[in-house]
Length: 350
Image 1 (cartoon, helix red, strand yellow):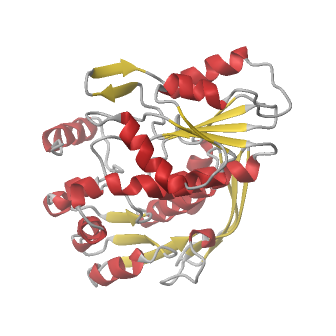
Image 2 (cartoon, rainbow, N blue to C red; image 1 turned 90 degrees about the vertical axis):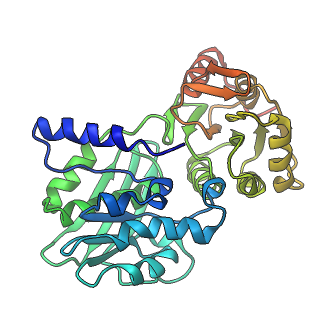
Image 3 (cartoon, rainbow, N blue to C red; image 1 turned 45 degrees about the horizontal axis):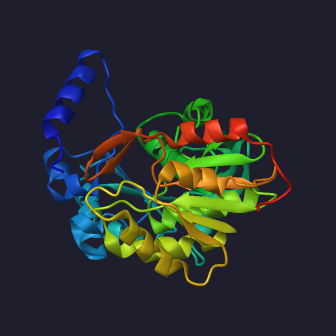
């Protein structure tokens, strides 16, 4: 899909007309590869992580990283590069940042088994994840910032602690006060389809995780919170990076029960996509395939007890499922709510 530059410019013009002076923009790697950052340089660039994704567009990890690097190559004098100090790719990105741009490292140590790859100015000393959200104990050593305290996010998971630290550093680089930035993030509700929790026992977790890294981190968060058994329902998008499918299967092995289904198969055979994921799962004892996604979600809840959790991954807040024959309306959260409304929890999965 070609980047919609006209739509972006029109949106920025409307924002300017109503008095907006600053905007946070998510730049896709495809738009960066096409030269967006050179045509429209940002004042502050934020890098969260590099994991296997979008290889259908880029062909290799090297091209994917080189595309992301364009955001930082074109930062203007006086700008800031906010880099995840626990992602190895940050060391390479730091090398291409212009000398007149500040490089600010942040991170959550659980991202890596080793030390940070660059100096860390803002770090999570402790992350506590619960069903009510995520608490982050922050250690900050930024010039002009005197903060030693906690941030309480409504979003659930260590990945959101990581994203919140990145946003906090970027906000301060833009001139927002440290406490004001934290207050704003603490007021922000959890986003639909991003570790969205439905029910109180059993629980459903709706998450957009569609890469091996994202799926693994989502399931790790769910496993840490789950007092019973953990099930996952997921597939992989058709017409996208085929090479990640086995790795997604490997990431799913942490679950007690795995139900493979369709994501958005587009023009591919859903059964072949599921077979590729299944190869990555290996000898797991509880794997089934149900290509009808609504039926698959229902299967994952069969026999669910009050302490069990079902993660429904891959589509997040999407409202339509895409097939070669067209689209159909399907909202994972609505399906889960309907099933939970019918359930009488039993002691364990059957």
